[in-house]
Length: 244
Image (cartoon, rainbow, N blue to C red; front, side, top):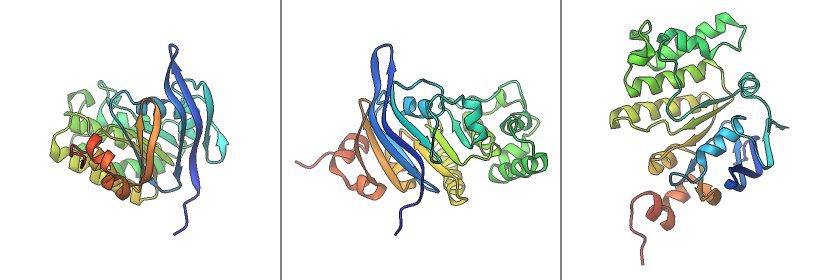
């Protein structure tokens, strides 16, 4: 089986906060059309990595190559125009705006209005609950509905690379199941996804490949099935005892 063309290639990435190296010499790649997970404990540097990709934090060293070109230091709004879109932890929706208005914000960089409307209709088909409440203020939605909206807004941006930061956080099990059904559906449409998820088992069961991050560094990587079977991963992240 041929490896997909690399869309995102991170080489020896360093990110420093107040003198502390939050990310150290990180190497990570995501192929075109792949769904790759990045797992690790809280504070491992996962969200910092996504924020560095999006230009939300400066890098101290290394390279971030997207679609064959370096993007470190590129403003976030320009990256959105190039197809790099993040759904942040905490969702980041506009609470005072309606669902429709939030989705329209996803298309603010686009001039193809008919296609934006088509993409909005597609989001409503993925999330019928949002369609039913389209005139409702986003701030009145449940946590799960807000997560749907944040993902929907990202989809209206027409991402080539979708960065998902803890999409299941704080959600009820049934809502988590629905969110991950949609993540799989988005991936099946050809969107490349880099997924950070506290539920390591769910992340690895959903993704093609995975990376394990600890103290700002990648300590393991490989096909997701291989990581699911790794005794250290099972002990540290899947809640299973490592065999003596």
